Amino acid sequence: MSNFANLSIADLNFLLQVEKQGVLLKAGEILNMSPSTSSRTFSRIKTYFDTPIFRLEKGKWIATEYFQAIRPNVISIVEAAEKLNKTKFRPSECTMTFGLSCMMTEVEHIIGGVLPMMIKEAPHSRLDLRKSDDEFKAVMDGLADFAIVTAVNLPSEVHFLRLYRLDRVVLVRKDHPLTRLGRDPTTKDLMDYDRVTILSGRARSWTGPDQSVFPREHYMEHTRFSTTRFHAAWEAMEHTDLISVCGWRAAEIAMRGHKLVALPLPREIKKGHVWNVLIWSEAKHKSEPHIWLRGLFSRWAEQEARRVIELAKQGKGPPKFSARTKLKD
Image (cartoon, rainbow, N blue to C red; front, side):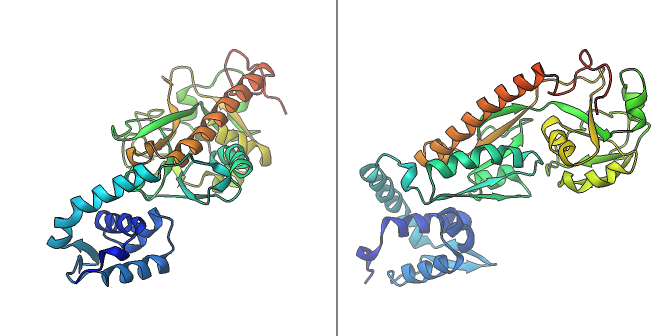
């Protein structure tokens, strides 16, 4: 005889995640459970049923017909419990781990602004930065709560928050020949030099910041180093004529510790208004903890916009042709 009385709401939520993910590790990670806890929880839950609820098939747990039959009741119980137990979220009591996926160099600048606010308001929570091969899939499958991506061809299912506009620049060493032209560089000038190509991790739509800059070339024809970890190229760029098209915030970080300088992208390149954004799934859209964390990112974006305006007033913001007469040491 099945012993349903021993099942908790957390147990039922776990079963629904196992059905969706097919892997105990993934199901547990979504619910902030360790691998060992996930395994023990699954073993315990199975003892409450006389009839098998999952079968292992090619390394994945597949729901049996019996579980499919009781699934509507499981969902109803979970939804009813959520309505009854809904209480006001208190960041000071939060112990959640939030997963953030991002491959961008400037994520350190974003984290540098968001994490102090998070620690102040929710000292027992944790932010876990990770890299996913497919950041959209990671968000939609619940393997990451959020991702920071460039807003080109975003899936219709994701929600997004604009963080900052992607101001693309050309990063070179300080004594690079391009800095001594005595005029604005052109696309033809850039094509004379080999490059470092930053990879976004996306196979299409937006492969990296140099997309559309060199349309007449074969893909990576003049790339001598390609990477998702842009900082790995900076020291080499100090000692070579390599150039790289990157976001200004990544260049800003690079220039702090290396003899590099940012030049404006040639005039003839259509820059458009491309934004880097925070994305999340519908499943996280109404979650109070996630709404709170999104609020921190929103506050950071407002602070960042004010910072860039102030830098521009001092002539230290993203380089522009009209303001740039000569390079400053």
